[in-house]
Image (cartoon, rainbow, N blue to C red; front, side, top):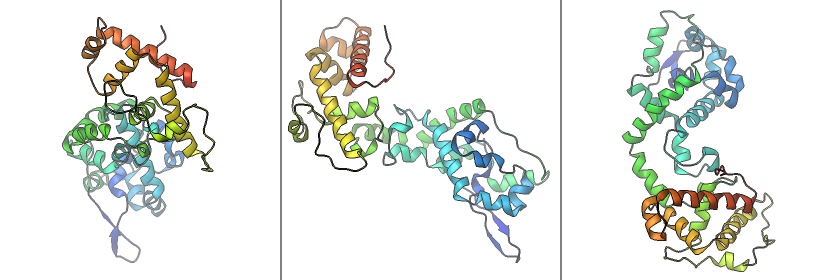
Length: 297
């Protein structure tokens, strides 16, 4: 990314912090600014203000401005990264949560694809009409742009292969505190071996085999207790399933195709497997009280 310098009152030059993100910021739709930081809606959007007005420059150089760009592009990129689940389901430790929040990845890709100008070019072009006001870009337009930008950046940096590896080697820290289908799947897989009929579970689960909520967790924030209870709850639900249902889920968790799962368990078509999984999902919703979006017949 390109950096530019500004002249101070004493005539010396210094780097204009965060200026490289100005073109990207001007692409953030108003509706998204409302969700992330309403204060930045009032930022002056003319070249004269952005490059000459001390108050506007101070706001651009603030952490607040940078955070808006990072959060906005993470939100816009996530839906096109090919990752199952919502960004809110994961924690800041998740590798792809971090990738999504690395704004230079997306801004560099937009510059390479000539969707955005580099800030130096932007400055030279716009200062020909310094009082031009840049309005807000419609949300549909930036969403359509990111639909092509994100796959380009993912391919360029080899993130597809990285995601396949991360998906197979998830850890507890990758997930946030909220409950999600992916988190539940991970805990069920974590506490079973890769055998044809898995029965081995962790010693933690054996200690509370009666499935009563554990009372030995003393974390004042309740995060440890919630984490342990999630694992126990998943194991308890697993034990309510028939051997066929367990086998269906296990084969799907190990990325077997629907058609092959149907043959393995003696069902007629892949559609029958899909309906069986939807039924299991509805039962899990009833078991936990969560609503995860499984279709009702």
